Image 1 (cartoon, rainbow, N blue to C red):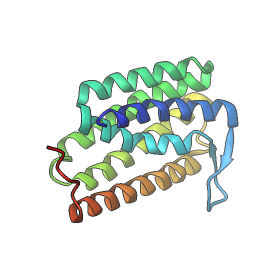
Image 2: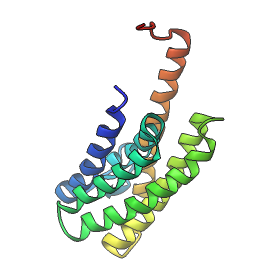
Image 3: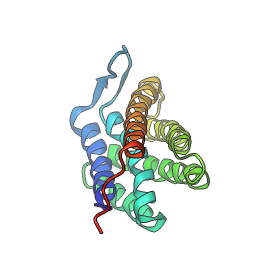
Length: 170
């Protein structure tokens, strides 16, 4: 059970790049903003990175970042390469913000690290892939929507587990 975040994390990295290459630009729900379709998967990746670090440690997390970026490179040239480079930098920044705060205020650490990661990822990806920041607002809002969703689900799960802890299997 402790490996599910790792598998989900690698799958989401690949899915984000697949969506960019396959679906192109999409409308961000609830807005008139446009963003590359991978924005929704990328928004989940930051939280899954945090969960991977919590369950398996930083070595596994770095291995997953490299594996996910490498798999993405198989999809297509410039878009996947831009995504892979942006992802490597943004996920490393996410890890740097998350790590020192995760033991004290876990949900705050997830939120702060996701914000840093999603802004850096958006800036780097758009500049490398398109040479412009035309989709910047859509990228940030789309990733932010997914971050809010992920954090809300995690907060709800933690609240539920604190009231009803799982039965001891021993």
